[in-house]
Image (cartoon, rainbow, N blue to C red):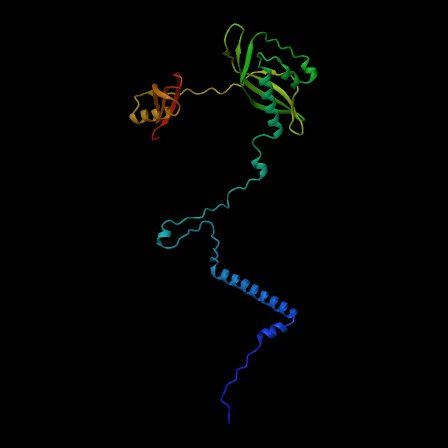
Length: 286
């Protein structure tokens, strides 16, 4: 007689795991971690291959970019830059002059400002004496009395190297002077030359007292000739607009016309009420 009953056998997983050697469990853990890491790397590589943008082809100079009709209507042209010169660092640093010349200019302007300033400062000419060599300072015989002098501005306009590290700097300047019994007056522009020595670290020292020189004479300006004429309204409007950039209440003094250009002399009031004359040149079509 056949027994129809089905017998199911259960595998004792808990007992088997309990009997597994601890070294085998560590080995399985390492294999599982390595497998997961490999799967992650593979997934990243596949994703990058799917989502990376298509490579952009190189565009030759002068090529017109065009796509569909809308893009083609506003196509851009890549300019050809192959013929433009390339400048070296030396070319870019050629102007302004070398650092030694700049140091000489700064020291000369500074010295002229101190030298021609005389006020009620108790130390008097101490800064000037300190700037000069001892043998030269002994020759310094300033005698301004009770007069007062201030340097309004001082600007170097020429610098020449006359020796190893020695420069002759021409400086133009203007002073405001006041005698003991009167107020300040603006003095004529004058010029002096100053000898300056410059060291390797761009330190500069004045070598001697300043020497007076003549100011350079500029070219003779040609006279502007034109016929007097009545200004059209559009030129009047332009004069008014340009005058408003500086002040208020413009008043036209004269107007001349020559070869399509207007020269209009106009006075303009500043914030304190002083009126200053200006010459405005306006071309036809501006």
